[in-house]
Amino acid sequence: MINKKNHLQQNGILIVYLIMNQNTPNGSPLLPDNVSLAEQKQAILASIIATSDDAIISKTLDGIINSWNPAAERMFGHTEAEAVGKHISLIIPHDRLGEEDIIIGNISRGRKVDHFETVRMTKNGDMIPISVTISPITDNSGRVIGASKIARDISIYKRVNEKQGMLAAIVDGSDDTIVSKTLDGIITSWNKAAERMFGYTEQEIIGKHISLIIPPERIREEAFIIGEIFNGRRVDHFQTIRQAKDGRQIPLSITVSPIVDGNGNIIGASKIARDISEHLSAQEEKARLFEQVKALNDKKDEFIGLASHELKTPLTSINGYLQLLSSLITDEKGKRFVDKTRQQVKKLNALVSDLLDVSSIEAGKLRFTEERFDIVQVIENVIELFAHSNNNYHIKLETDITELYINGDAHRIEQVLNNLLTNAIRYAPGSNQIIITLGREKNDVKIGVRDFGVGIAPEKLKQIFSRFYRVDETNPNVSGTGIGLYLSKEVITRHNGKIWAESEPGVGSTFWLTLPLEK
Image 1 (spheres, rainbow, N blue to C red):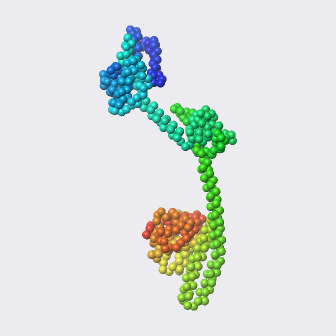
Image 2: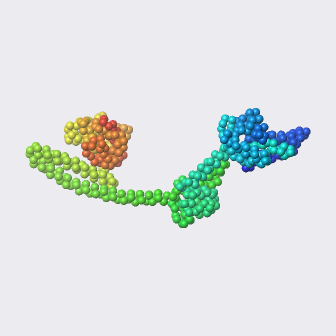
Image 3: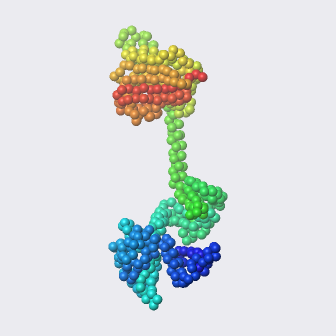
């Protein structure tokens, strides 16, 4: 009797192992004693066909289906009742009907058709790639009377093959070296880019140890890399040196990833290597150019500092002589000319001072003195100075604070406020009003300088504190060097404060700054 059956699939051939004359656990036979051996075998085969995962179909030489197992129902969608008695063309696409004539021709001559890959059609019209094995069915006299067909769905196999083919094409066509190896370091794949990079052909290198391309002084790197891979960790963009067949040393950036089998076991490593010789050369060239530019920039700053310093003395003398001349001239017209000249000398002197400050900043030599001072008093002094020289402007201070002390360089903060008020006047030619606000915000003092001028475009706001940057298109007739706001940012930053601008074109701008309060 029968206790178990094993179905093994090898290369698509169904092998059935039948273990006969076994009893059930209680000692009784599985089938009655009066059942013949032929009937036993028939029952066994029927059970195997019914439980098989492969579609098993039998048909006459005329193509009429006379058996149709449950797997065939699942694969093609037709029930046994729907398929039996119908022609096999029920599942053959129209453009493949010619295959049936070839198959029947072979079967009629007693020839088996093995692993024939084709496409068949389901009940709902879907096409399924299958592998079929067709065997002749003979009667007792050995005459071929039909055919049995075992069909296996190879959709997954096809997709895997297509994916493998695509990956192989990608690997083979890659400009990067792609190599795989075992955990023992034995090379198992080597693409064309690896051949070009290292000079070894695939035939020369497969089966060799990866140390063949590792310089002796770097052999310890391999132990580190394999250790990381063994623990399931990827090694990303590891920069190193590897050695070509002709002895050349090649700087590389490599990424190494674990190779995992179907059970999740790490069985090797894949390595992608890229030659970074040009990248390193570009970095070296960039560093060299940077040093050259830095040297030229240092010389430029040195020149600006020297020129600014040398200009200070004659400007001071000119201003003194003009002051003396003004006291000697008695007519009003002459005094007016001298006063205008003194104003221009004052502007030139301020410009020279700014250039000298820029030079000091670049050289890291801008000096600050720290003292405790009343910020309210500094703002009022600046307003008074501007009101005296710009009597057609109304500068208003909005605050309820009468006294507020901070630590810092009062002269430098006054310089910042001077720059902001100068710009407020310069870029608001059609207005005569400026509002200064003063308030407290947590641990900071917050100051705003608002004008009602041309405003600043949003995309320009982030650049206005850059050195020598000017928003020329807003008012091309306005003169300026683009130094004032750069210096203002440096001064405020050195005081651990912040400075920024808010603006709407055509409405005006507000420049804000914060400074830490005295602790």
